[in-house]
Image (cartoon, rainbow, N blue to C red; front, side, top):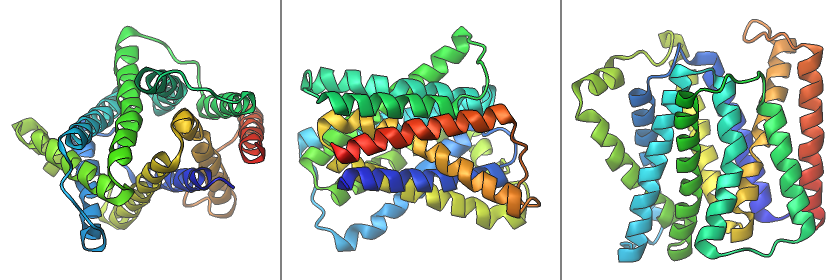
Length: 301
């Protein structure tokens, strides 16, 4: 199997575990300032790898890409959490998930020119994209200008995050590139401490419902950190023409989440119990078939 494909699948497994943990332990609507700060701050743990890598200062061009990537990453996180605070999770996830591969494909053509993509790879991308849309789509969203502004902007920022991080990895090797990106992400989230209200959200808002769930919360964040690390590795390894495909694999995250949820609903209903209608099961099965078909084409061709 293609190495970047295997790593991307593993990344979305950990994204699924992180999403399941968030579903269990997070209390109420997310505070954008608080969540953005903690996600950015926890990413700084990657500096623990510095003794094991040959870290050099990025040159001027590399530094520009690192800074731009950190900016769009923080902007994407913040606006995503703003959307999650105002609108239903299923709506936000489906909109960002549906538009991001398209934006990445457009940006890839813009920065590197039109790419020659084999017909079978295009078919795989389409199947993966459709599978991701189907599995994340739960309700017919009520589209408003406010909703579109925040979700589309977040999708744009995350799409540019893919592109700019690829530029970083083209100049720096993987681990040094990740370390520099996370350092600058941390520096930019410190800006959130300037506002008094923002500081109150960060240090006074209760992220979890009680002390018993704190360990679960940080485990979920650890899974998210591993997932982001693996996703970055997949981006660094994938050829430029497959950047959009890496993102379209996001549907696998919802497949893993669906399987995990089914497992706990059946064997541990006290932990999590979700009623699944016939329509939802059919929807998930159809999306899984599309995703598996897309993966099969990628592996075969």
